[in-house]
Image (cartoon, rainbow, N blue to C red):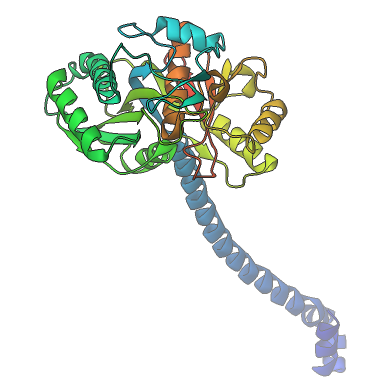
Length: 377
């Protein structure tokens, strides 16, 4: 405005005094036009920047939504076969499930191992004069026999991916031969392709890479005659998974939601993994029916206990499989998942799982098993 007045006086005060309108036009009108022009140009610049920001926000929101939907994927659990020291030969597993729910630790005791040494561990029930080869053959026949009935509902051309984990003093050649012989006698018609992976990290990878495949995922975990006997638990477990987007032949028994790995082996890291696993299942901690702990040693035990208390998980309904059975080794996460799925058969309540894949792997995984009556997203 001051520059406008100076401009009006500079153009000639005499002429401007004769026409006051002209004076005010130069003194106020020209600066006002300049300001309006500046505001107009700034408005155009603001609208262009706003459109760029809104477009970025839409892309970011779409990306976050896609990531959340990806994180909240889950696997259908179609079949379970669990054999531990609590299951008698030729039994259907009901007594085993009751013992697990009752926290019956009678199976973990000092007894003679396969090499004649007395150690505190749990063993699969064996018959008189039965060797570890014969025991493993019988356990595999039972496992595949229980899975064959479910696989019979699928056509022979339905692909099946096999994830097999074995911890045993028996050589890989012997275990492979026993597996092939038992598979040939089971009557399963589908061809199985062996895949790499271990523990719940394999489920995490499968949900990312094969969520829309027609392929079924079969997990078989075996610990028979382990190299380290003290505190171990012999177990044979099989789990058949189906993709929710492609499997509609059979109704699922339960849903295994995406497992979450603890990034740091601290109380804060474990608690963060607990909350994230619950968020993947869209589930408040108050609705959890039971907590299953598998493979955790003394260093991880206090962290898990603290996380259970801080997350408001049911402390009284927690089951430490290490105290009930012993350490199932690499089969620990699968034993916990199988036990949780079996628990949903009698109690339609979500189950929470803490598991460690192996002693060599320091990571801790948290996951949620939901009953089929109330699937997550």
